[in-house]
Image 1 (cartoon, rainbow, N blue to C red):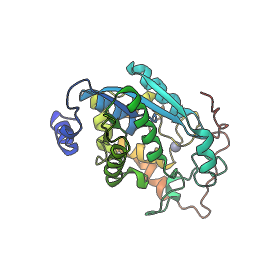
Image 2: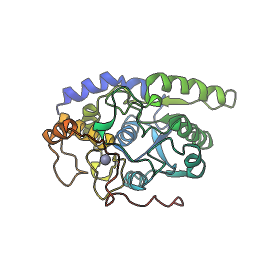
Image 3: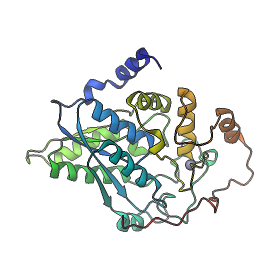
Length: 282
Ligand SMILES: [Zn+2]
């Protein structure tokens, strides 16, 4: 990865748009513990924001990603808030998403149909999480609200698109109009490919080994859920080894598993990997 490549990446992001008006302005960054949110957090810090992170217990079927978020924040020495919204979100999304309803199994990437919103989509999750992040920003006098939405190599979630980011920015500012608060809703990696996100993270010194992207809560990332497949593809294309994986996964394996014929698409989770739903009290 050359300096020229990094410069091109910053130009593609149009990074000047995301810098604070003056250095040291505060920003709240949504931190899921996955690669996109961690790279966003590192980027925000590197361009001059005084960052704090927030993660959510929304009833995920495992606590791996929130554990990852906490260790990343602690590793950076920043303030980290965990907000528990599991009680109402699990009720409201019951039967609608594999991420909070453990009766619905996480699909393999090969079973996700092109152009369809996958069952791992949590309805209206991003507007909800961003609203809570805005409340935190309001409380702490922060003006940046950043998240790792990505519209390229993404999972097909409608609330990760640039149009959503722009609309939310308008909405949230209307919601606090005349209070003296003014927010910038920022999704700086929205137009990057997964490989570019990996390269950017590597340049910024992201501790990949602390991150967790897998939708399943096994001991190791499963390697075949949509989040794992996109991550493996990104690292392979970037030519960088993923420090979160103990065993090297070659792109050949991914391609063959993506094309593997499956007469009965299985949405069952390997029982050995299926941990009990996490406690909601952390
Ligand atoms: Zn996985």
